[in-house]
Image (cartoon, rainbow, N blue to C red; front, top):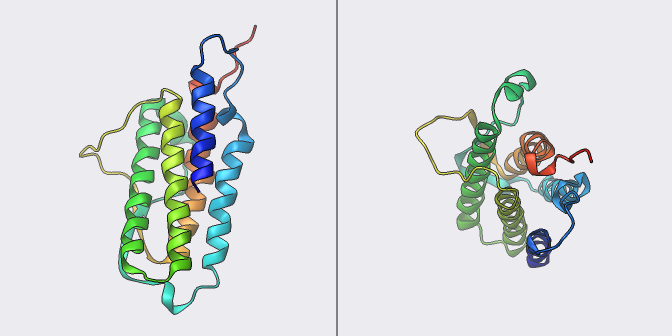
Amino acid sequence: MKARLVTVLLMVLDWTRPGSPSALRPICDPLVLDRFIQESRDIELAMGTCRDRCRLSESLTVPRTSVDFAAWERKDVREQTQEVQEGLRLLGQAIERVKASVSDTALIGLLDSSYDNIHSIKQVIRSLDMQDWSPSSRTWDTWTVSSMPELFRVHTNFLRGKVHLLLSRAPACRQENH
């Protein structure tokens, strides 16, 4: 978990080093995001074996993961970034609430890993000089989940969908034609 954060931080520091070449940043490599998605998918699969103990005592609000591609394309990068950051905030809150309600150390470990994944992605978005987000009164498209497997399915799909779209089209990731 901490190794992943250290890796992300080292990548960020390498990008800002004076005299470093202006090649694509490592986070712009789809394989880096794929690793975050795979970690999320592994947690989702681990949760699949969870039965009654994974039912939540309350429904939790999470971001809707479906993407209307035409509507997404009409949004500017700032609005896309805000939507992704709000979704990450909702997922982080949901994971924190679940973590506060469980005592199983294996589940806590999975929750910690998932929360670290979200935190690392937030750092990546910040490192790409994308719009800093602050909560607003705007309402985003959400829905509710009532089990941990559902929560982690949303987490995985959110990374595969909106986070992937945002990072794949980030201005800092566009290779200039020289």
